[in-house]
Length: 141
Image 1 (tube, rainbow, N blue to C red):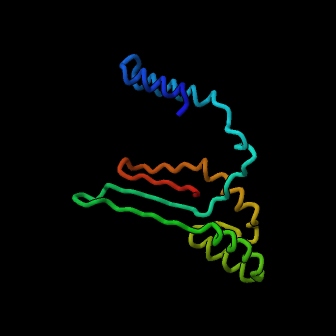
Image 2: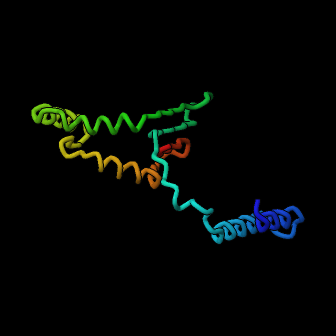
Image 3: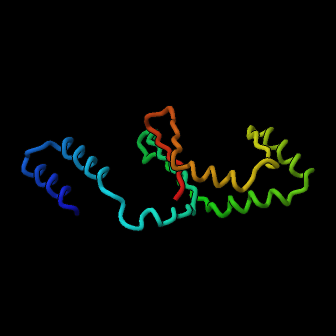
């Protein structure tokens, strides 16, 4: 623990500052900290899984329901690459069935670089559910 952080926690323990003030001070100290040597040189690790987690407390008298799906991103990457091997007639039929099911995706237009771009942007993904008792998160890990 660095010295500034230790001093802030000491002031909090002595009652000289409030918890909110300590939190703001620590955040300010962390913003001022330079990156550790070599941190900028380290490449960002490539995510391995797409995770969808949902917790719902709307089951009266029960524990609520839970959904926890972990999909290997390598499976998605392979699937995107495999679409290029499908014959055009098959792609047309698949796209028609997907559209009929309410999924308007054109698999002929899906490219591997688009999937990588989507994965990169999942860190910024936010899903709102109009139910105070249900929480959902979609992220890569």
